[in-house]
Amino acid sequence: MGIGSQRNSIPRTLDLRDRLKVLVEKELDRLPDLLDGLNDKQRLDVILKMMPLVMPKAKPVRHDA
Image 1 (cartoon, rainbow, N blue to C red):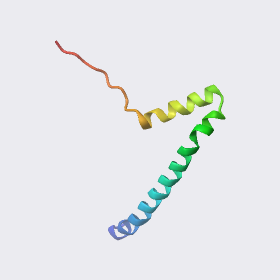
Image 2 (cartoon, one colour):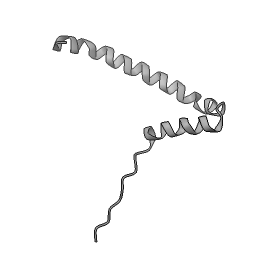
Image 3 (tube, rainbow, N blue to C red):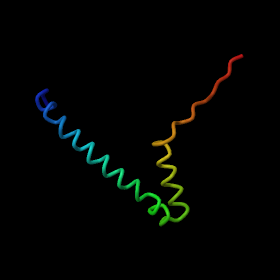
Image 4 (cartoon, helix red, strand yellow):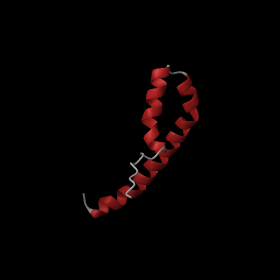
């Protein structure tokens, strides 16, 4: 894949990102109803899988005296 083909793929990549963003935004609007339709275990599994996307991982705190 040469530089020319990389340049030609940039608009398609941006278009794809825009389309994916719209798709995700629509699904986020539906999320509360979708979660309500799950049993407790399924709902917890979904929430745990989404947590890393919205919350940073906790890092250990070290105190040196």
